[in-house]
Image: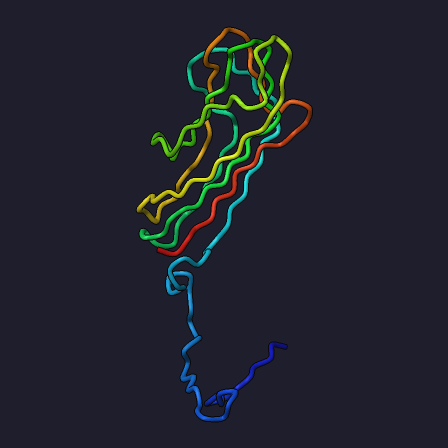
Length: 171
């Protein structure tokens, strides 16, 4: 059985006034939340190892979909791509975050690498704020390629998991 509290007014702490409620909270939806409020959160993970052997961009497998409740909403995107290994000096991985076929941001991953042929491992994170201006489903994904020297760059090695979190922020 659901409980209800019924009051017409709430008195201020110092007793000098009252606050009239008159259904001010009934029917509150995500659309009526204050600007900057988090309206929904979507999380996706991907842990299958991926090999990057060319300079052409390929999907990393990390994808998440969100349906904004308002066209004025912004989407905060947090991405962590993990377990990156390269076999050759002067090679690096370029990742880009896409909304459908639209570039949101791009990063070149060089941290954790040295100038020898020793295998190096690292992970990279990025944070972006996007304005998709729609209430239709929006698909975000990452793509990557091998840049620089030849060889294969691997992602999600040693059973690590890459993650993407999408947060709808009221606009």
